[in-house]
Length: 448
Ligand SMILES: Cc1cc2nc3c(=O)[nH]c(=O)nc-3n(C[C@H](O)[C@H](O)[C@H](O)COP(=O)(O)OP(=O)(O)OC[C@H]3O[C@@H](n4cnc5c(N)ncnc54)[C@H](O)[C@@H]3O)c2cc1C
Picture 1 (cartoon, rainbow, N blue to C red):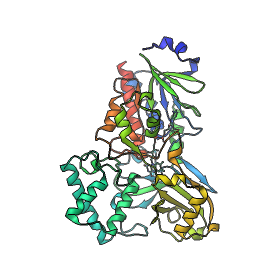
Picture 2 (cartoon, rainbow, N blue to C red):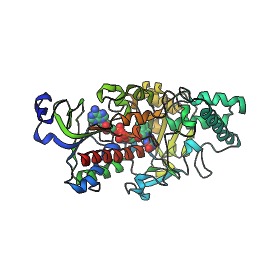
Picture 3 (cartoon, protein in one colour):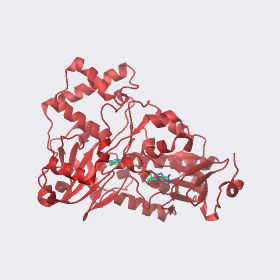
Picture 4 (cartoon, rainbow, N blue to C red):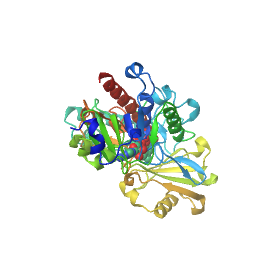
């Protein structure tokens, strides 16, 4: 193992004094930003005992926010990544004051994807008697998942088994299944049955209304970035970390033409990036890393005429292989903006023109009613490789814990939405994981 004194020689390039920090954060999404604010908050025992640590953040992109990305669609702004605050009651981003009630507008009174619409929700579909059987069926799936080993089995397997007891699924139940697939971002034949055994569910939300941010998720990123910089965070944009090398008393971080060193490093890159770099990149256990999955949830955002936007409720089911649901901003924000959601990996192969033509056909829009569009292909973006993580049918219940355990006693810590067992997938998970990693590092600083 190298010692810090050997750093300049072994980095293969000069480490300037300026590139030497107590703590480096790799990745400037919400996990990286919340970690930075927490490290610099001065409230931890270690911080109180000594000077505030020097903290720098290395971000591959020329902007912060990662999968929180408010983009331009013609003259309007829209969230191409995360859009929903999944439940307001007890949500830590609201409790900690990063999001206020003035920022929010409710799109549904409850989690529409897991529980279906409430009476007051604006949808092309309502809760019918046929739907009522859905909860009974999921309870049966849960019983069979708990009774037999759920490992290697999917939700679809569980639903097929439930047919012996409850008969074939009706149309209402199929529609609810499609919404549930939308929540997980993957199809029922990939969703792990472990999710239904009562003990090991992830992808958690909070109770209460599900909301969008009127000003886009951009406002959250800007607030946290401002706070972190105010507290002394140094930000390096356009810095892809290629290699990390652990030393006895620190870590070397190699970028293309610059090398940084720090006593501690928090890596917040997505599960997709970890998978693409392979287990050796951070010495992580291979099987848990490969068993967890990145979904391919994409959005076709359309700037349409007001007349076109007025024709749709907030949520509309779509009957298409490529697009499963339409979300309409107009009734909530008076922005004539439509967002078609897709889970099919194949949709990433569609050209802009094909996607636009498909939207016109599905929504009965005239081409002239669309003035601008933005089509995401999250699976093809090298800094994330997918939309968000999910425990697939191949995952074991302690896979996330195994990833975290692999960093115990080391100077590299992990954060990011994929590292939060309870809330995996959501940006609240990213936020909480950043706070947790900061506490782990501060504990280490204190022990040293
Ligand atoms: C289409 C879509 C819809 C979503 N919808 C919702 C929703 O409605 N509600 C919700 O709660 N969540 C949603 N999510 C999930 C949410 O966006 C994520 O959980 C959250 O933003 C992840 O934050 P993070 O900090 O963990 O990761 P990221 O945001 O991915 O941040 C990681 C950062 O690391 C950087 N990076 C990667 N590799 C390197 C490297 N080698 N060197 C330096 N930097 C690197 C990346 O550029 C990135 O900025 C959605 C995601 C997508 C894609």
